[in-house]
Amino acid sequence: MRAGGKFVIGAAALGVSALSTGASAEIRMSAWGETPDHRKVDLYTLRNKAGLTVRIATYGGMLVDLIVPDRDGTPVNVIRGMDRLTDYFERHASLYGSIVGRYGNRIKGGRFTLDGVDYQLPVNNQGNTLHGGPIGFDQRIWTASPQDGAAPSLTLRYVSPDGEMGFPGAVKATVKYTLDGRDLRVDFGATSDRPTVIDLFVHPWFNLGGAGNGDILGHRLQIFASRYAEMDESHTPTGGLAPVAGTPFDFRRPIPIGTHIHDCDWQISGNPRAPGYDQQFALDGKAGTLRLAARLEEPDSGRVLEVLTTQPDLGLYTTNFPGTIAGRAGERYGQYGAVVFETQHFGNSPNLPQFPSTVLRPGAKFHEMTIFRFPAGGGGRASPPRSPHLIADAPPCGMPTPPHAR
Image (cartoon, rainbow, N blue to C red; front, top):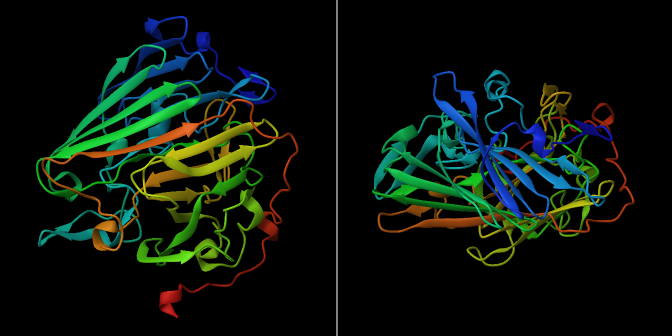
């Protein structure tokens, strides 16, 4: 149903069978159909006493719904998703809320060398390997193990065989989703029987006003990073870090996302039809320790999202491409309709030894954590100013040139 023009899901509308219920939490599971190659997919619903509800599919480990109350207690879905499994295939939306791996973000040319051995991966993005290649972890079926209690959780497991998408080593990956109070905690783990590289994260597309409810240009964003990664023309890190001060990437204090989204910086305006952020930030503090990476506020609803992570890097993507796609019933997802926070290692790290290593060796364990926190009480009511330009009115930037090509 809808409340105030926003999509709202109640318990009775989920249509799933209970695995466990209690006064403080519940877990439900239902069959959710089949992939085009006839692999069965299940859908799990977790709910806790704090009012958070999440639905997770075993296909890609996708976060299908994340339902969060506003300041008045009205629950609304704050991430992009689809009603039916078949919609994800028909609308090419496999990366909505999915687990990204075996290696998130880009590897330049799909090539890297490890222990003197050269590896060539299939490329799928401007000559690079992006998000694990053409068939990444977002398109695999994961095995699910639910755990009830006051903080219900779902552990997903996938074994990636040696050589899958060109990567060495058989990798046993685990991703555990836990609803704990106002937190959705995500724990990532992996082991390998051969030296390999790995970078796992999850990829929800947020709009705190409600998925499909306008754009995110007025959301106020703060990123706790004083440096950003220098990129080449394919948005692959080159190994350098530059200060955010005096650039459109300075979110050290909260500002509306739309404030600089049409600035004539080549990393923003390189594609005249799709200007916007697709940027990686070197987070302040010590990598490996849980710390605040970003804070997002939507003043009209009062919802606030805090992103905490142990990872060294935060990717910011503002869903830049023009046009719209049909989402859930009655929802349309358009340009700048969501913001994505990729808590990750730096892209192209296997080729850039100055960045934190992504090598995983036999006997070692990969472990990282990300928390999506929705503090009770929310933010202020006053709406921030909108972006200074609409797309049609954006100032012409010409054809900006990457610094390394000048």
